[in-house]
Length: 92
Image (cartoon, rainbow, N blue to C red; front, side, top):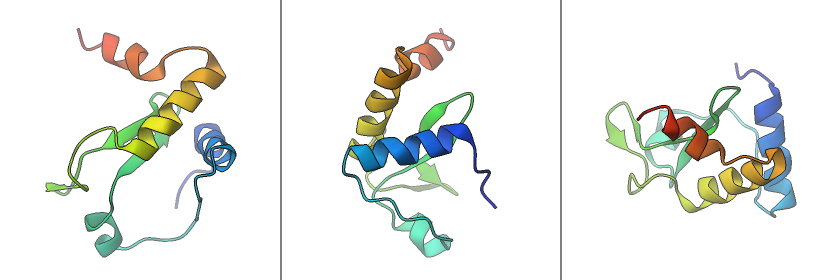
């Protein structure tokens, strides 16, 4: 039940360009709890790293993880703005 949005599709295309394997599949709770890292895509966040799932850390809980960081940098390069800095500047 994932919206096939523009941010999601852009992230998939960037991953493929970077040689990052992309698999689309339904996941279960075990997959979420044992993931090395995770992120969500959305119009407002573009790519947003996830540090925990139901209170349990994802991987070592460092955000962004290396894959998420590569994708975020590529996304920023594509749109010509640091998307993470733009979002974080609103927290000040």
